[in-house]
Image (cartoon, rainbow, N blue to C red):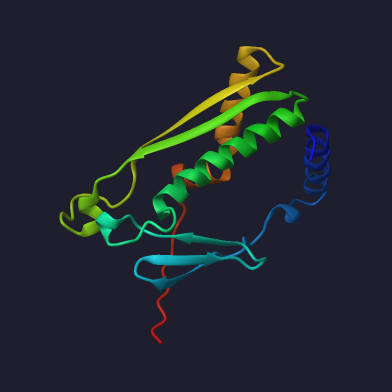
Amino acid sequence: MTDLGVREAIERTSAAIAADSNKAKARNVPAIARLTGGLKCEVTGPHGERLVTDMPPAMGGAASGPNPAWLLRSALASCAATVIAMRAAKLGITLETLEVTVESESDSRGLLGLDDSVSAGLQAVRTRVRIGGNAKLDVLQEIVAWADAHSPVGCTLRHGPPCALEIEVV
């Protein structure tokens, strides 16, 4: 889809939601992970989406796919890039360069249960954006800042929504 096509789609969707705010709310499609052997999981979605995760050999996996924490970083990076591109298209700005890098640190003691005071979660998540296009520096910076404030994955990580756990023993 061209930048113009993206812009038109955003304007059409925005107009529909402005006319009826109920159209803005959605129940997101589930991701279902099934253990297929060792630490390898196949994750599927309702429309044929499929990916495989695995852990590195040091954790007992075979490294046959990316680990779940890398997928979280990739989700943050690709969501940021997508929202930046959407905002640029809406403003009529053509991007010549867009690269989003997400890095993090972790402490395996949390994952392995070796120290209950250490979180298994990622720590110090950093996002770096390289951007260039037919706009001034301050406009490109504003686009990135706006996108950061409106990225669904970024907002989810920053605001930590309530999470529920249901267990079904079969």
